[in-house]
Image 1 (tube, rainbow, N blue to C red):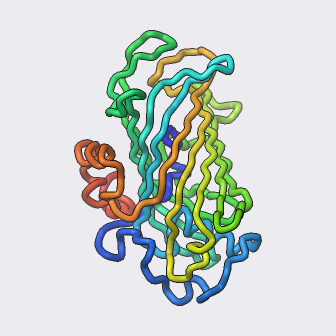
Image 2 (image 1 turned 90 degrees about the vertical axis):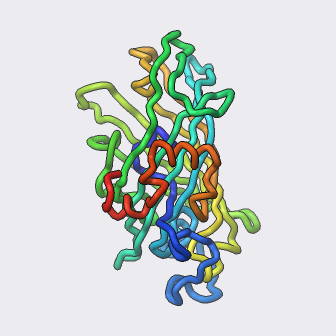
Image 3 (image 1 turned 120 degrees about the vertical axis):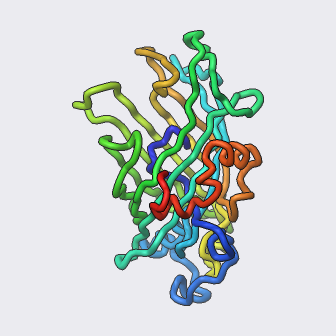
Length: 290
């Protein structure tokens, strides 16, 4: 999840105060979901409702979430441990007249030491032997539209600008009370792109329960998230024209409030992105520079 253009920015929330903390148990408006109605996940409208509850919210609260994981280098089918990643997302959605959901979303992520989990500021590249400076990642806010078929990007930000973007949701998988929905994202430079070629492929799996999806009182579910990414070498690695790519693997969950983020994420965000910690809703609303 990070290295991602602000495309699938993971599934965030909106602000502070009792209604803004994204608490799963808040009461839904009467028309948000029919009382006692079980969702038919093969029906597009119901599928979109389930999807939005899993990766966002049916109301306009702030949504939050994180993933924590590792990145490998891949050359000649061999993986080499490189570094870790800890990424958090913030978002807010509103329902459109056509039934889709429009959202504003941004991400703040940190690269970490593979062994200690500490913030990585300098990294000795095992392929080149060179010590490089490691950037932090902050992307967005971007405007997206959630449909049953996939995301539509209204204003792609950062690395996604000018690139081709494809996104889709796979049909829900249901086993007993468990539900999984997979999101695929493909971002890359066009064949006629002038400059270094870049590709970003992401597969993100969301998991929750049928009971929560079918509960009309819940605006969002307690969703677990699993991420896999296949990405071109990051420029800061200074890999030159070496063949190969990055392989990312991470897991996390949706959160109810800022203090549910991992302790180190809270510490680093307070230090390096104080405006995010103070009021992510203001950034989503365009009241502060993101």
